[in-house]
Length: 248
Image (cartoon, rainbow, N blue to C red; front, side, top):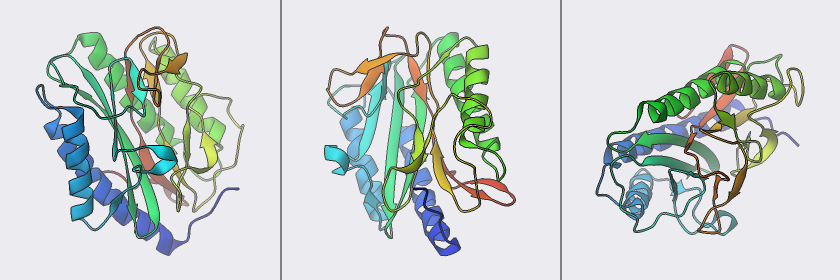
């Protein structure tokens, strides 16, 4: 069941979103050749706690870290480790904040050092697909309108859209109804109404959209070993249009 948020609850979620966005901005600066993903995880937790919040992912569904850090063909939910980032890596950072009982969720893809033109294009297409999806998140549209817009843009650019993973509602728990796929038909799925808070998170591949479990046994990777990118924002649907709650 979709849980509609009150104005007071949305205000709290927005406060948590500012903490999350500021933390992610710092992690993006740190993601350079020579640093480990475990160091990024520790920095993320310290930054969140310093703001009076908690990492939303730590302990959630058995996940033992604060930050999801996935490199190259790995798409999401990767374990931070002693892996040292190197020039040319494609790093996906996915992080959640729990603040005053409510969660926010955000993801970004960072090019570590110098990457190829096609890799830059993958990043830019994924980021733009998120912006286009957000524009469709308005009263009177449906969940399917969001996914259809993302899918059509991404596939027109020659990339694949992951179908076995999706966005979601968010609130007192990290994952709530409704599911928010990154593909679909216009007019399908739940109607979007004022007070819905959802996470839109396109996951885009340079090759086939099919996925498999990653080597750590928790996350997911592309089935063909191609590179992937991932961006996510938490948004609230209002009568005036979508409002992003996880922007710096």
